[in-house]
Image (cartoon, rainbow, N blue to C red; front, side, top):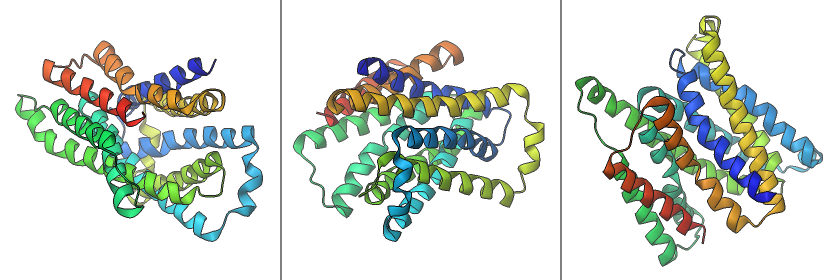
Length: 286
C-alpha cells in the first residue's frame, strides 16, 4: 500500500505545475499564489489533526517559532517567484531549475550546518547541475527571447528561496512534529502572499478571475495537498529510502503532462538533461 501512496505523491506533485500554469494564464501570479495557498493551508492543517500533532503547539520554543516563520517567508518568496516563472516560461524549463534547489540546499547545508558532502553526493550534484543546464534552451522566436531573461531570473530565485526554506526549516522543526512545522510555515506563506496582493492593490482582480482559472487554481492547491497527504502516508508505511526517490520522480510526471496537454516537447539535449537530473536525484537518495 505504501508504494501506491508514494506513486500518488509523485503524481499529484507532478501535475501541480501543470494545473497552476493553466490557472495563472489570465490571472496575476501573486493573486494566484495567494488563492492556491489558501487551499494548501487547509490540507496542511488536516494533516496536523489527522496525526494529533496540534497538541504540540503550546510546546514550541520561541527560537523554533522564529525559524519556522523565517522558513515560511522563504517558502512564500519561493512560491511567488516559481509561479511568476511558470507564467513567463515553459514548464519543462522552469521545473528542472526549481528541482535543482537540492544542489543549493546541499551546498548551504555544508557551509552553514557543517553537513559533509560525500563523493557520491558530489557526483550526483554535478549530474543534476549539468542536466539542468542542458534542459535550459533558448527559443528561436524574438518574443520568447524577450521573456527568457525574466523567467530564468524568477526560476533561479525560486530555487534559491526553496534552498533557504530547507535549511531554515531543518533548524525550525527541531523538537516538534514535522507536520505541525509545515502547517505553521504554510500559514506564514498565506499571510505573506495576501500582504503582497494588498500592497500591490491587486485584490480587486479577484473579481475578474474567470471560472476556468478559479477551477485550475483550486485544483492546483488540492493537488499539492493530496501530494503531501500521500507522501506522509507513504513514509508512515514504507521505507524512506524507497519513498523519497519515487516522490522525486514527479518531474517525469510534469514533463509527460506538459508534452501531452501543452505540446511542450523535449529536444534530444533536453531529454538527456532530464535523464541526468533523474539519475542524479536517485543517486542523492542512496
